[in-house]
Amino acid sequence: MMRPLHLAACLALAALPFSALTQEQDATRTTEGSVEEGRMLGYTCMGCHGIPEYRNAYPAYRVPKIGGQSREYLTNALTEYQRGTRRHPTMEAQAKSFSEQDIADLAAFLSSVNK
Image 1 (cartoon, one colour):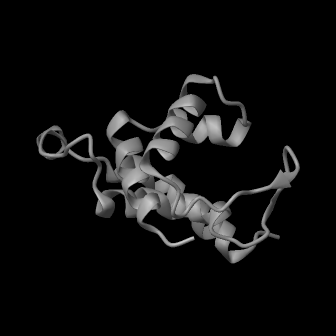
Image 2: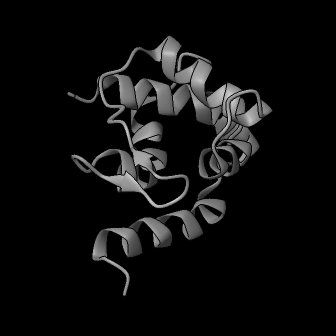
């Protein structure tokens, strides 16, 4: 049985490709990242990273809370998962679906969230 939060995260993930920005909108965004755009993308992240003491099923370990981390740390971590130089099956799959702008937006939003 799926918990409601997991179901919401799955639904949000499924909807992401349909919420892609047009090229014209993309041209107006900066590499600094948009907190608002990151909030939309970060909804899925909070399905695991926003739950206190949440443990991942595979591989089994405590999922860290990422709210309030620095932009630099978040950007580096997501980029490393995207490249496969930082290993975790779920995070690698997530990061590979992100553009450079998505990573900047996520880092902007997540760094603004209180721990």
